[in-house]
Length: 517
Image (cartoon, rainbow, N blue to C red):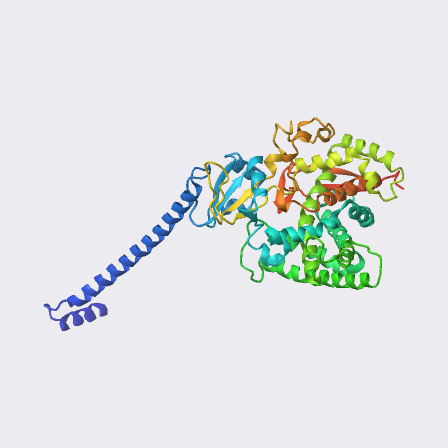
């Protein structure tokens, strides 16, 4: 009732002929039209950008196999966040060269041995790229990022650190460290099987630090670097959040690098002091400093290294060895457990060469164990630690008669297909060490396929060092311990964390060997 009275009163005060001013409706319509035009403009801009993205991708892709269109903006980002060997195989199966895109980064993957080797051996057109954040993590002036003469000079200056004479002195250090770890494994062994990935990583890191720096680096520093290096591994995966802000993998890795470099630089300084005082070299850095002191201006390669440069090189050695050797070693432990007949043959060969397993192996003794080295080589072939090595084209690269890789492209030579080629390695998915013992086998007749350590000017400088370290570790373990493997549905599947690892972590249980000395 009250509402009606108010309504009637208001209506009575407005003449019937009164209407809403026309300018009010015109303004509203104009604003609506402007808003509509704005949305159209935004849509046009977005559509143009997305269309341009597709056009650029298709122009770069040319006739290469691969998705005809790329997912707007992100491309195959989701696939790269959780890489699988099955996903890579699917990409490799598209052709010798194939294309994809991730966040506007145009990528060409090479799967054939021909193109992979061509990339490795074409420094004029392409250089190692690792990942976008690698220079920030390892420092942009680290020698691994050098090219041309600068890289060649550095490499010549470092080659003498991995001669057979030098490697023979490292074996004793490796033996001492690995035995200490084996003793801890046995002391900490539980009734149930345990994931050994971290145990292997810790063993490899301490072995490397002691080989490289000896007593120049204190044990607390060894423990700190060992515990934190995993942060660098996480940040050096192919895809990562690129900005270095607190909480990101890249930021955490940089902090780890700073702490590691502090210890490694101090180790280099102490080594120079010790060598100047006439002490006997005890590690790689000592040998390096001794060589520098003996060289003159007529020596080939770079001969004058600062403490910081020495530390950078050691850091790069850790980067090159830690994940790859950890992967290779963990698969050796798994393969020895899964193939007892292979372990028995290795031990039969070993016992003839080293009747007393408490004595460190010499390089000469290692040379007398061809079956052991064949097992190591075959295990690395079956489960190659590094499946691919990203490169970046520095200029247009006419890689074939029909395709030129554009400048600035991420170009990825793939190792896995070469070492699983059934024409070179019959039954490529089987562990067959004997294929390396026959000089006339297709494996030995085609050494160009064995790209585990790369090829060309950036081929791994420590290839023999790494092989001997893994061989020494596994044969000493087999001679002094026994272990069994708890197989799971994921034992033969892989997880890719920079390098390959068993997806279940490799569940082993160690026990003392009754006959061990």
